[in-house]
Length: 211
Image (cartoon, rainbow, N blue to C red; front, side, top):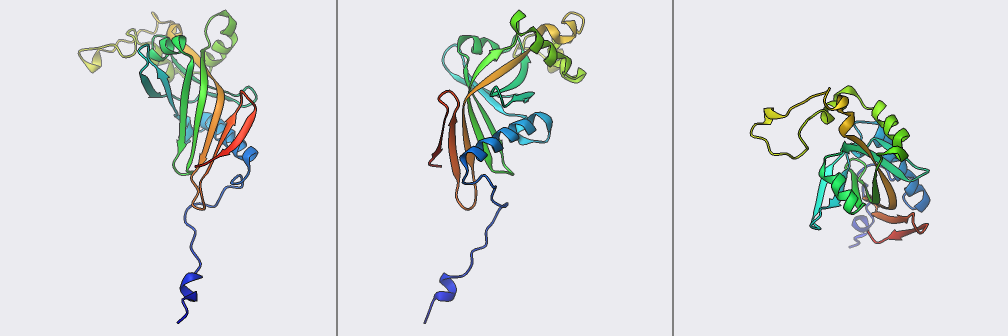
C-alpha cells in the first residue's frame, strides 16, 4: 500500500504572510528602521515603549521601560526623555554603553540595540534640548515637576509633591537622552524559518546569524 497521499499532503502555513525582506539583509535593516520610526509616532506600536539596560556603579545590570521620542535614521540615533535626578543619568555618566530592547509580538520581530547614551544638556545641546522640551505635552511635563528625586522612599504613595513654579514647569529636571546606535541585531520569528542578522554600524558590516 502506498503512503504517497500522506507524505505529499500539503502543509498549511500558519501565521502572517512572510515579509518581503525575509532573505534580504539590507531590506531587513530598512524594515527595522521603519519600525523604530513608527514607534516614535504611533503610541499603539510595540516599539513605542522599549527597554533600556545600563550598569550601576557596582556593575550590576538594571533595566527599565522608556518612551521612544525620536529616531534619526541618517545619524543612527534614537531618543528618549528622563529626569536629571534618575539613576540612569548617573549610570550613563559612569558608563555610557547600554542596550535597548524592542519586541513586537504581533509582527514577531525583535531588535536589540547596542548603544552609547548621551544626555543632551548644556550649551552644546541647547537647541536639541529646547526642541525636545517644546514638543513635550503638558501631561508629560508633570513628571518632572515632582520635588523629590525618582526612587526616593516615601511613607505614603500620596506624598509625592508637585511644584510647577519651583521646577520651572518641570524644565529644571527634564533631559533628552540620545542613544547612538553602534549595532543593531534583527530577529524575525517566521513560521517558514527564523531570520537573524547583525548590522554593525561602527565597522560598516552586515551579516546573517544563526537564529
